[in-house]
Length: 74
Image (cartoon, rainbow, N blue to C red; front, side, top):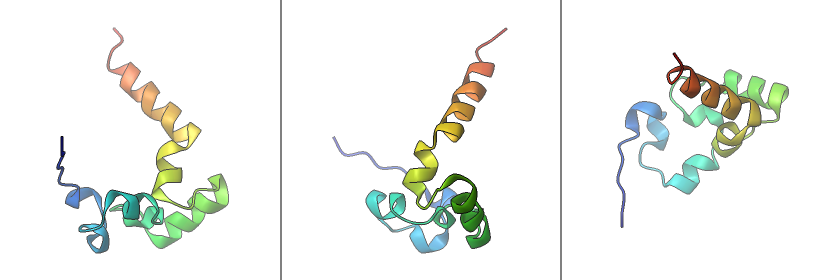
């Protein structure tokens, strides 16, 4: 089953027509709102070089889970 999703609002314009693999292998600066200097700081602080690294980083993943859980608690 093919799945289509519009990610244009979340990506830098240069990546709007890129494949998923191209985006995942790109610098975090491929994400809208992340500058080249932000990407350099992510690499320096966390060793994050790609969007894939960013999305699978244990600290960011944990933060995402905690935020999701906060909406489920009383």
